[in-house]
Image (cartoon, rainbow, N blue to C red; front, side, top):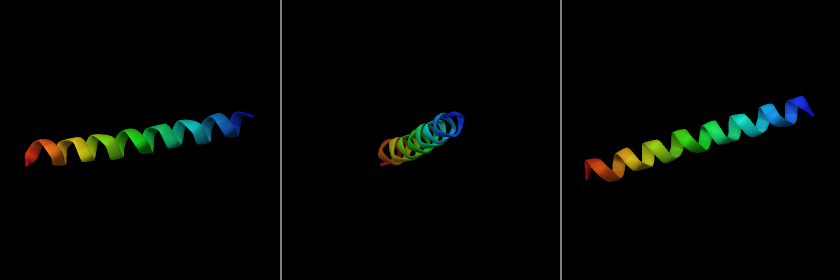
Length: 29
């Protein structure tokens, strides 16, 4: 089950990166 947690962590990190990129785009407008 360790790999499952690792995958979850990766997904959360990817989501965070996408959100931050989207946020910065929204601010720059």
